[in-house]
Image (cartoon, rainbow, N blue to C red; front, side, top):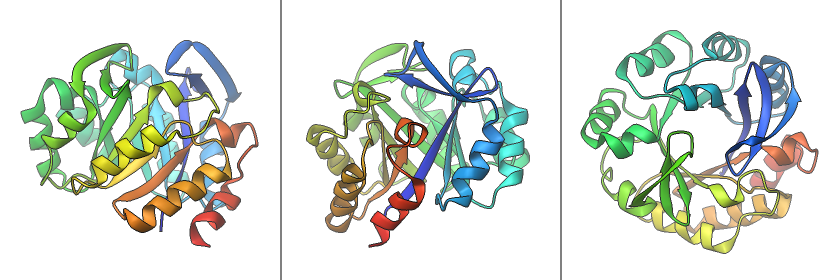
Amino acid sequence: MLQILPAIDIRGGQCVRLRQGDYGQETVFGDDPVQMAQRWAAAGGHSIHVVDLDGAKAGKPVNIDIIRRIAASIDAPVQLGGGVRTEETVQLLLEEAGVDRVIIGTQALKQPEWFATIVERYPNRVALGLDARDSMVATEGWLDVSKTSAIELAQRYVGLPLAAVIYTNIANDGMMQGVDEGTIQDMIALANLGLPVIASGGVTTLADIERLAEVHKSTPNLVGAIIGRALYEGVIQVEDAVKAVTA
Protein backbone atom coordinates (compact mmCIF):
# COMPACT_ATOMS: atom_id res chain seq x y z
CA MET A 1 0.00 0.00 0.00
CA LEU A 2 1.17 3.51 -0.83
CA GLN A 3 1.92 5.48 2.34
CA ILE A 4 0.38 8.94 2.86
CA LEU A 5 2.71 11.47 4.50
CA PRO A 6 1.17 14.84 5.44
CA ALA A 7 3.81 17.57 5.39
CA ILE A 8 4.63 20.22 7.98
CA ASP A 9 7.14 22.90 7.00
CA ILE A 10 8.35 24.95 9.95
CA ARG A 11 9.73 28.46 9.66
CA GLY A 12 9.93 30.91 12.54
CA GLY A 13 7.98 28.44 14.67
CA GLN A 14 5.01 28.51 12.28
CA CYS A 15 3.50 26.11 9.73
CA VAL A 16 4.24 27.54 6.30
CA ARG A 17 4.31 26.50 2.66
CA LEU A 18 6.68 27.87 0.03
CA ARG A 19 6.26 27.96 -3.73
CA GLN A 20 9.09 26.17 -5.57
CA GLY A 21 11.22 26.40 -2.43
CA ASP A 22 11.27 30.20 -2.63
CA TYR A 23 11.53 31.73 0.86
CA GLY A 24 10.09 34.94 -0.61
CA GLN A 25 6.87 33.12 -1.58
CA GLU A 26 5.69 31.96 1.80
CA THR A 27 2.16 31.36 3.06
CA VAL A 28 1.58 30.88 6.79
CA PHE A 29 -1.05 28.21 7.52
CA GLY A 30 -0.84 28.00 11.30
CA ASP A 31 1.12 29.03 14.35
CA ASP A 32 1.19 25.62 16.07
CA PRO A 33 3.06 22.87 14.17
CA VAL A 34 2.51 20.43 17.06
CA GLN A 35 -1.26 20.82 16.86
CA MET A 36 -1.07 20.43 13.09
CA ALA A 37 0.90 17.19 13.42
CA GLN A 38 -1.69 15.87 15.87
CA ARG A 39 -4.45 16.76 13.41
CA TRP A 40 -2.81 14.96 10.47
CA ALA A 41 -1.94 11.91 12.59
CA ALA A 42 -5.47 11.69 13.99
CA ALA A 43 -6.83 11.81 10.43
CA GLY A 44 -4.87 8.66 9.59
CA GLY A 45 -1.63 9.94 8.07
CA HIS A 46 0.78 7.01 7.96
CA SER A 47 3.80 9.16 8.78
CA ILE A 48 4.42 12.89 9.28
CA HIS A 49 6.95 14.61 7.02
CA VAL A 50 8.54 17.58 8.79
CA VAL A 51 10.91 20.10 7.21
CA ASP A 52 12.85 22.60 9.32
CA LEU A 53 13.11 25.39 6.74
CA ASP A 54 15.15 27.54 9.10
CA GLY A 55 17.47 24.57 9.55
CA ALA A 56 17.84 24.09 5.80
CA LYS A 57 19.17 27.64 5.54
CA ALA A 58 21.24 27.54 8.73
CA GLY A 59 22.79 24.13 8.04
CA LYS A 60 21.64 22.73 11.38
CA PRO A 61 18.22 22.15 13.01
CA VAL A 62 16.74 25.36 14.41
CA ASN A 63 13.25 24.31 15.55
CA ILE A 64 14.45 21.34 17.60
CA ASP A 65 12.09 21.95 20.55
CA ILE A 66 9.04 21.93 18.26
CA ILE A 67 10.33 18.77 16.57
CA ARG A 68 10.72 17.06 19.95
CA ARG A 69 7.17 18.02 20.91
CA ILE A 70 5.76 16.75 17.61
CA ALA A 71 7.48 13.38 17.99
CA ALA A 72 6.34 13.04 21.61
CA SER A 73 2.72 13.95 20.92
CA ILE A 74 1.77 11.55 18.11
CA ASP A 75 1.90 7.81 17.48
CA ALA A 76 2.72 8.15 13.78
CA PRO A 77 6.38 8.03 12.77
CA VAL A 78 8.10 11.36 12.08
CA GLN A 79 10.65 11.93 9.33
CA LEU A 80 12.63 15.15 9.37
CA GLY A 81 14.65 17.09 6.84
CA GLY A 82 16.31 20.47 6.85
CA GLY A 83 19.86 21.13 8.01
CA VAL A 84 20.84 17.52 8.70
CA ARG A 85 24.53 17.79 7.80
CA THR A 86 26.56 16.32 10.67
CA GLU A 87 26.66 13.03 12.55
CA GLU A 88 25.96 14.93 15.77
CA THR A 89 22.71 16.20 14.27
CA VAL A 90 21.71 12.73 13.09
CA GLN A 91 22.40 11.32 16.54
CA LEU A 92 20.47 14.14 18.25
CA LEU A 93 17.41 13.67 16.08
CA LEU A 94 17.30 9.85 16.05
CA GLU A 95 18.43 9.11 19.58
CA GLU A 96 17.19 12.09 21.59
CA ALA A 97 14.50 14.02 19.73
CA GLY A 98 12.27 11.05 18.93
CA VAL A 99 12.51 11.32 15.15
CA ASP A 100 12.14 7.98 13.36
CA ARG A 101 13.94 8.93 10.16
CA VAL A 102 16.19 11.78 9.02
CA ILE A 103 16.46 13.12 5.49
CA ILE A 104 19.86 14.16 4.15
CA GLY A 105 20.23 15.98 0.83
CA THR A 106 23.09 18.47 0.62
CA GLN A 107 25.72 16.28 2.30
CA ALA A 108 24.78 13.24 0.20
CA LEU A 109 25.99 15.21 -2.81
CA LYS A 110 28.93 17.00 -1.22
CA GLN A 111 30.26 14.22 1.04
CA PRO A 112 29.15 10.89 -0.46
CA GLU A 113 31.51 8.74 1.64
CA TRP A 114 30.29 10.38 4.84
CA PHE A 115 26.67 9.89 3.78
CA ALA A 116 27.25 6.20 3.02
CA THR A 117 28.83 5.74 6.45
CA ILE A 118 25.85 7.37 8.18
CA VAL A 119 23.37 5.21 6.25
CA GLU A 120 25.23 2.07 7.31
CA ARG A 121 25.47 3.27 10.91
CA TYR A 122 21.72 3.92 11.05
CA PRO A 123 20.22 1.30 8.71
CA ASN A 124 16.72 2.09 7.40
CA ARG A 125 16.61 5.35 9.37
CA VAL A 126 18.27 7.68 6.87
CA ALA A 127 16.54 8.88 3.71
CA LEU A 128 18.18 10.48 0.70
CA GLY A 129 16.54 13.79 -0.12
CA LEU A 130 16.68 14.24 -3.89
CA ASP A 131 15.46 17.72 -4.71
CA ALA A 132 15.70 18.33 -8.43
CA ARG A 133 15.31 21.24 -10.80
CA ASP A 134 15.19 20.06 -14.43
CA SER A 135 16.31 16.63 -13.07
CA MET A 136 19.51 18.18 -11.59
CA VAL A 137 20.11 18.02 -7.83
CA ALA A 138 19.55 21.23 -5.84
CA THR A 139 21.17 21.74 -2.43
CA GLU A 140 21.52 24.25 0.43
CA GLY A 141 17.77 24.56 0.95
CA TRP A 142 17.29 24.55 -2.85
CA LEU A 143 19.37 27.71 -3.19
CA ASP A 144 22.03 26.03 -5.37
CA VAL A 145 21.60 23.73 -8.37
CA SER A 146 24.40 21.23 -9.02
CA LYS A 147 25.61 19.61 -12.23
CA THR A 148 24.73 16.15 -10.91
CA SER A 149 21.51 14.48 -12.05
CA ALA A 150 19.15 12.98 -9.48
CA ILE A 151 19.49 9.52 -11.02
CA GLU A 152 23.29 9.74 -11.02
CA LEU A 153 23.37 10.67 -7.33
CA ALA A 154 20.93 7.89 -6.39
CA GLN A 155 22.96 5.31 -8.28
CA ARG A 156 25.89 5.94 -5.92
CA TYR A 157 23.86 4.60 -3.01
CA VAL A 158 22.26 1.51 -4.51
CA GLY A 159 22.75 -1.44 -2.16
CA LEU A 160 22.91 0.62 1.03
CA PRO A 161 20.17 0.25 3.70
CA LEU A 162 18.46 3.53 2.78
CA ALA A 163 15.09 4.15 4.42
CA ALA A 164 13.85 5.90 1.27
CA VAL A 165 14.64 8.29 -1.54
CA ILE A 166 12.42 11.35 -1.31
CA TYR A 167 12.16 12.80 -4.80
CA THR A 168 10.95 16.37 -5.19
CA ASN A 169 10.56 18.18 -8.48
CA ILE A 170 11.07 21.75 -7.25
CA ALA A 171 9.17 23.17 -10.24
CA ASN A 172 6.03 21.42 -8.98
CA ASP A 173 6.42 22.06 -5.27
CA GLY A 174 3.69 24.23 -3.79
CA MET A 175 2.33 25.15 -7.22
CA MET A 176 -0.90 23.10 -7.02
CA GLN A 177 -0.43 21.94 -10.61
CA GLY A 178 -0.34 18.18 -10.10
CA VAL A 179 2.37 15.56 -10.57
CA ASP A 180 3.46 15.53 -14.21
CA GLU A 181 4.25 12.33 -16.09
CA GLY A 182 7.89 13.31 -16.53
CA THR A 183 8.31 13.40 -12.76
CA ILE A 184 6.52 10.06 -12.42
CA GLN A 185 8.90 8.54 -14.97
CA ASP A 186 11.87 9.88 -12.97
CA MET A 187 10.46 8.22 -9.85
CA ILE A 188 9.90 4.94 -11.67
CA ALA A 189 13.54 5.04 -12.86
CA LEU A 190 14.69 5.58 -9.26
CA ALA A 191 12.43 2.78 -8.01
CA ASN A 192 13.78 0.45 -10.68
CA LEU A 193 17.24 0.90 -9.15
CA GLY A 194 15.86 -1.05 -6.20
CA LEU A 195 15.41 2.04 -4.01
CA PRO A 196 12.22 2.80 -2.02
CA VAL A 197 10.92 6.10 -3.44
CA ILE A 198 8.58 8.68 -1.88
CA ALA A 199 6.92 11.21 -4.18
CA SER A 200 7.09 14.83 -3.08
CA GLY A 201 6.03 18.07 -4.70
CA GLY A 202 2.92 18.75 -6.75
CA VAL A 203 0.48 16.28 -5.19
CA THR A 204 -2.63 18.40 -5.66
CA THR A 205 -5.76 16.28 -6.07
CA LEU A 206 -7.05 12.82 -5.25
CA ALA A 207 -6.42 12.01 -8.92
CA ASP A 208 -2.69 12.51 -8.23
CA ILE A 209 -2.90 10.12 -5.28
CA GLU A 210 -4.82 7.58 -7.36
CA ARG A 211 -2.25 7.84 -10.17
CA LEU A 212 0.63 7.25 -7.76
CA ALA A 213 -1.26 4.34 -6.13
CA GLU A 214 -1.69 2.86 -9.60
CA VAL A 215 2.05 3.21 -10.29
CA HIS A 216 2.74 1.57 -6.92
CA LYS A 217 0.92 -1.57 -8.07
CA SER A 218 3.33 -2.10 -10.96
CA THR A 219 6.32 -0.41 -9.25
CA PRO A 220 6.08 -1.41 -5.58
CA ASN A 221 9.27 0.48 -4.76
CA LEU A 222 7.24 3.68 -5.11
CA VAL A 223 6.25 3.51 -1.47
CA GLY A 224 4.77 6.86 -0.48
CA ALA A 225 3.40 10.30 -1.31
CA ILE A 226 3.97 13.51 0.61
CA ILE A 227 1.06 15.97 0.58
CA GLY A 228 1.58 19.61 1.53
CA ARG A 229 -0.26 22.69 0.28
CA ALA A 230 -3.25 20.67 -1.01
CA LEU A 231 -4.02 19.66 2.59
CA TYR A 232 -3.71 23.17 3.94
CA GLU A 233 -5.94 24.62 1.25
CA GLY A 234 -8.52 21.88 1.77
CA VAL A 235 -8.26 20.41 -1.74
CA ILE A 236 -7.36 16.98 -0.30
CA GLN A 237 -8.42 15.55 3.05
CA VAL A 238 -6.03 13.09 4.72
CA GLU A 239 -8.89 10.65 5.28
CA ASP A 240 -9.77 10.67 1.58
CA ALA A 241 -6.13 10.19 0.55
CA VAL A 242 -5.81 7.18 2.88
CA LYS A 243 -9.04 5.70 1.47
CA ALA A 244 -7.75 6.20 -2.07
CA VAL A 245 -4.64 4.11 -1.43
CA THR A 246 -6.49 1.36 0.44
CA ALA A 247 -9.32 0.98 -2.10
